[in-house]
Every structure is written in C-alpha cells, then in structure tokens.
Length: 190
Image (cartoon, rainbow, N blue to C red):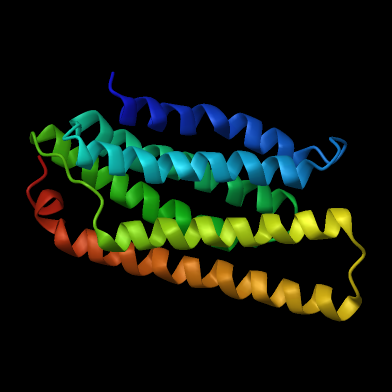
C-alpha cells in the first residue's frame, strides 16, 4: 500500500477519536482536541491527493477510498452537530442523499470496469463542508476558553448557520452535476 492510501486510511482511523472528543464534554478542552484531530484528518486529505499526483501514485483504490474517507469524516461531524443541536437533521439528510447517490453511481461504474474520480464540484463541496466544520469547532473552542456576550453568540450562531447552509447548497449543486455528468451509468445499468 502506498503512502497516499495510508494517509486515506489514517483519516478513517481518526474519525472515532474525533467523534469521542467532540461528544464528550467531560474531556477538558474537548473542542480543541476535536479541532486538532479534524484538522489533522483534513490535512491528510490534502496531502494524499498531492502526493499521489506528484509521484504518479494514483490508484483505483485511492480514487474510491479517498472520497469515501471524506464522507465518513464529514458525515460523522455533521451527525455530531445534530446530536449537539447545532444543525438540523434536514441538513444531514441533504448531505446523506447526495453522498448515497454519488456512491451508487460509483458502484455502478465500478461494476462496468470504470472508476469515476471526484470532479471539481465534488472537491469544492468537500472543502466547503470542512470549512463549515472548522468554523463550528472554532466557535466551540472560543466558548470553551472565554465568556461571550449574548450579541456575539447570536452573531456567531448566524454565521455558523450561513456557512453550514452554503456548504449544503454546494452539496446539492455538486450532486446534481455529478448525476448529470454520469447519468449514462444509471441509464445503462443492468
């Protein structure tokens, strides 16, 4: 297994530690720990692709596992946010619908001997989701270490929601484009 694929697997392995840190407020500075773990996992996402392309280490496993690792990390964060009352379950349903649709197309393509890699819109969706998650985590870090005024809390909550819903919009757009661009796999499925 090459280095980019190991980095992809590391991202998946970090998910339970991220979830535990985020959902266990009894852990001192749990938001800081969750943010550090999430940042480390996000960096592996950036590194695995760059290394794979630069050193010609792109593999079919990487093309399939890299987006899957992203989905596991991001959906885990959003599921935690629902548990914490930060985002609506409708938001997570939108994300899940897109991800299941895209993954289904990938599986159909794989059955036909094709590997469909992420496109620019999928990458923009992933980046927007990771930024939204980092913004929420940063807010948690700040509230862990300082007392915020009601006005700051109100404004911060609005900013978080706007960023989260922008990422939901990009999620929908990227899903529609992905389905449109790969509709042939659906149409020709056996």
